[in-house]
Picture 1 (cartoon, helix red, strand yellow):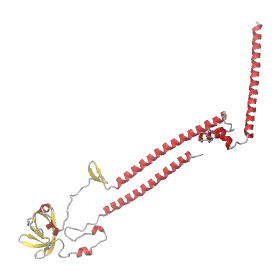
Picture 2 (cartoon, rainbow, N blue to C red):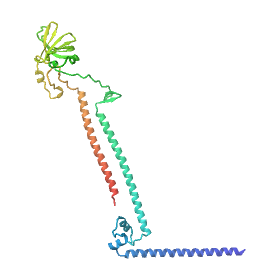
Picture 3 (cartoon, rainbow, N blue to C red):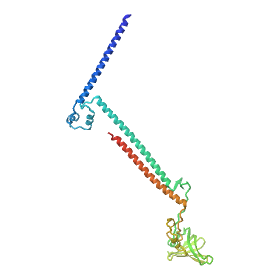
Picture 4 (cartoon, rainbow, N blue to C red):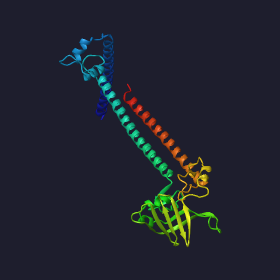
Length: 330
């Protein structure tokens, strides 16, 4: 029964001896490697720099001229031996990984720049669209033109204004479509009135001689007959059994009223003193304020759009400069 126990002790002792021998061998190998590395480093340190001819003979091809690839090889061959050690290969791989990371960062920065540029341009487009819509005085909603408050806009019928003594130049078909005729009547010969009157009468029809282009007769809906002579710029109206002279301007004031009421404001100007050409009434206060506010808003929106474009340009310039800096960073 003692034999197995002795065998186990002998085996354990042998294992211990083997472990000690292995540990000693590993230590010796490590010391040898350290010595070899030191000697190699010393050789690298003591090795003189090679001339360009010697470098060409090591790295260049048959033509004796180094290209870009061969120059990169010489860069990573630290000891200039023409052979790459493990450490040199690791340096190559490390630089390759750094370049990959740099390219990945550049791609992300480029994509981010594109996204930001699209967002900024979209915002700019929306702001310009909204400013243009706000500057409009009228809008169209559901086929109906509305104002800024959403109320429907009323549109008047287009009217054509002609001078009284220009009517003989117009054909009777066109004269028949006239809605009304405005002129001055000199009724100072009537004792009851003894003044001139401004009259507006609805037109019922028109007549003229086929061979006479200077005279035309207009019949009002009240049955009065108006005679207009374009050549002599005179006219008359037959009212019952009485005939009164008519004109397109005041018989009494003539043009004195217009000469004395000349205004710098274009709203008060009138080209002629004809009865059909009334001076325009000055705009109301609220309309003036609305026009001024609209002009101010349009001017402000133009300034804002210009500043926004300038900011976008500077932002894109900064981003592109940053990307180029990353790309060409040594």
